[in-house]
Amino acid sequence: MTHRSLRISGLARVEGEGSLLVRARDGRVTDVELNIYEPPRFFEALLRGRAHTEPPDITARICGICPVAYQMSACQAIEAACGAEVAGPLRDLRLLMYYGEWIESHTLHIYLLHAPDFLGYDSGVAMAADHRHAVERGLALKKTGNELVAVLGGRAIHPVNVRVGGFYRVPARAELAPLAERLRRARDAALETVGWVAGFDFPDVEHDYRFLALRHPAEYAILSGSVAVSDGTEFAAADWPAHVVEEQVPHSTALHARLDGDTGYLVGALARYALNAHLLSPLARSAASDAGLGPVCRNPFRSIVVRAVEVLHACEEALRIIEDYTEPDAPAIAVEPRPGVGNGVSEAPRGTLYHRYRIDGAGLITEADIVPPTSQNQARIEMDLRHLIEPRLGLPQQELSALCERAVRNHDPCISCSTHFLRLHLDR
Image 1 (cartoon, rainbow, N blue to C red):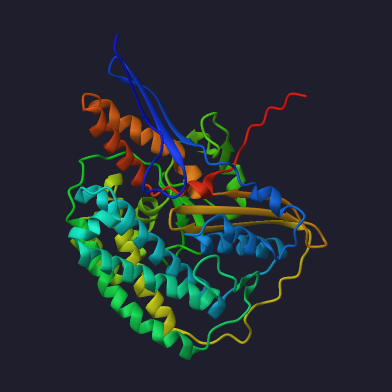
Image 2 (image 1 turned 120 degrees about the vertical axis):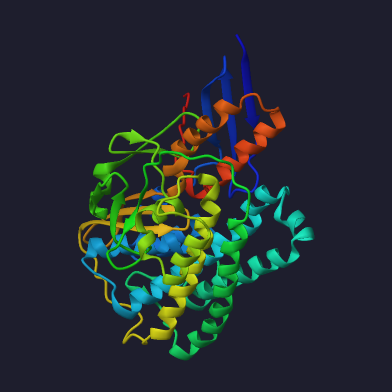
């Protein structure tokens, strides 16, 4: 009888703090635990008793990399509870800001967190010594995304210009014009990025994923749409609680999620691409084809290519919005409180992000529920690891550990976003 265990006490090049434990016995993997040990942050409790206007500012603090995603899902949930809908130029500005976040977040992951895995470096800094041009291209791309968020949000990190109903201030057309020229350069850099990452050497791995992402009839869904599953299921944001149920597992402060009773579904770039690739911009579709991506990609190591395609799409769509922009009559619509429940779903860079709020007649929040993408992906990441490791148990410990870390980074986990739960035992 043979036993083997592998423990990675601190995962590198991911946002937040987590560890990994794998146990094997007689050539079979018996346990895989992605241990998210970062302390819970209690945002849902913080929101109770606050005014219905406050979630965009409070939830933006959940993450410094994807604050816009939290603001957009929060706004949509509150607006749904109050019977309001943001449309026209205000919706376009929300999309534009969201594209800025996609550009900066995906580019950070591609160049500084994920590419070193394929090129044999421990960090993006080490990689820059031999691949300076590539890293400078990535930093310039990320800067363009940050500038988009800053112009619309007031600052690039934890934006302050977003409000329920729209914005506190909207830009004049002339203010967006300089961004268009930067986006044209970014579009060229994004196209180069797709070709660059498509040339990496990818492990020959495929998984039979059950994908979940937003679907919109007219656009590559990011800000709104119905929730679609690759098995053909489709439901409205308001029906999320009937399909997605969270549960606590002993080894993680982040909740796991089940979809219609089954664990291990996947959200994120691979899911969006599988369900919506036909709605990518023309240049992004062409680049995906040239990169060897079919209509569905099931190799998680190739997710870096899909993210690069999404950056190119975001640059193209951001340019389109700026060129067609008409300044709205007012920076926001009125959103008057009323008793009710609202649900909001949007596509954060890492996947589908759900918010639900119940408010009373005075506009105070009485219940809050936030389901981040990384917590939804935890069980699927553990399943990926199990399938990846078992036929490779004969590898040396250091090589197997490195492969496991790479497999986790495929999904760009945002651990601080996902920390959610604390079991407290108190002896009196």
